[in-house]
Amino acid sequence: MLEIKNLKQRFPDNTLALNNINCSIADGEFVVIAGENGSGKTVLVKHFNGLLSPTEGQILLDGEPVGKNLGMARQRIGFVFQNSDSQILGQTVADDVAFGPRNLGLSPEIVNKRVETALVETGLTDKKDRLPYTLSGGEKRRLALAGVLAMESDIIVLDEPFIHLDYEGVKQVLAYIVTLHKKGKTIILITHDLEKVLAHASGLIILFKGEIVFYGNPSEGIEHVSHYNIRKPFGENRKIESMTWLTI
Image (tube, rainbow, N blue to C red; front, side, top):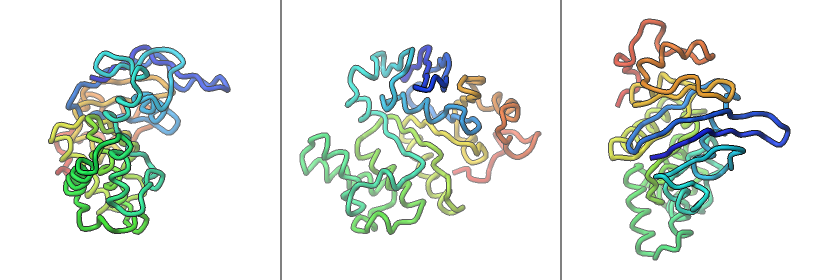
């Protein structure tokens, strides 16, 4: 369980980025965080594993403050950022996936096993010896996911995972995200395009000017999105249940 209590974030220039954020995300959920540019989405999720420290409030992971054991929090909560290139550190695909487990001090046998499993789960086994920068955009996102899986993260946070991808790339990445959720991973996904993912979500958080203005069932939240400069999927009268464009 991830709990955010009375979170406030103020930047050095006195800008209030987040104000009075309260929410909780249970194990196994698929939560979408939506909001216009500048609403505080990325700032919020960077608190989940201590990439940012709150001005006020607490972030609890299974009842313990995240800051109490940052190493454990960052192992359990894996991030896939907008720019996949910024997460590529290895000389080959397999080497890149191995980077995190090696830094945990695991034995070569365990590292190799985790890498092999992660590559199979993301469909990258046949590309394990490739240079990461030669991969397509969708493959790079899958590589970032493989790195998170190799860390055996329970919670996967994805920041705009479909940005700059073509249709095939979006299908590939979404398919793997949905598969991971079905296998029990907790998914927290930031997006400005609800059409792609809301049919798979169990919860929706809408941020507006640094505050949560909706937190609950996507079927209810979809009626409010247009009030906060978020495009409503499939027109005014379509139901979430009828979204089929990328349903896996």
